[in-house]
Image (tube, rainbow, N blue to C red):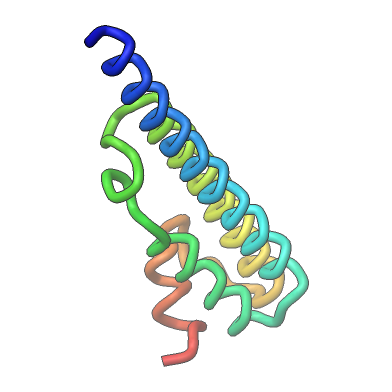
Length: 106
């Protein structure tokens, strides 16, 4: 019984770690793509990062893996917003929603 429980827990941990790896890789890919795009493309990448499996969807909210994923999401958002600020010469603040609303394709 104990071995079965340990095997099950280990299996779920491997899945959650794989999800976290995938999520952070997507954020990095979107950051890279955004930094090579015009304002519309960068805002589209920003929208994708913000909406991609929010906290609690692939990871247990507040767990170590969730905090790691959300930290990487926040870094990608920060970098893309900084790029948009430079690219457009405007300052719509730190909130990604303002940038998405103004520049993403509708």
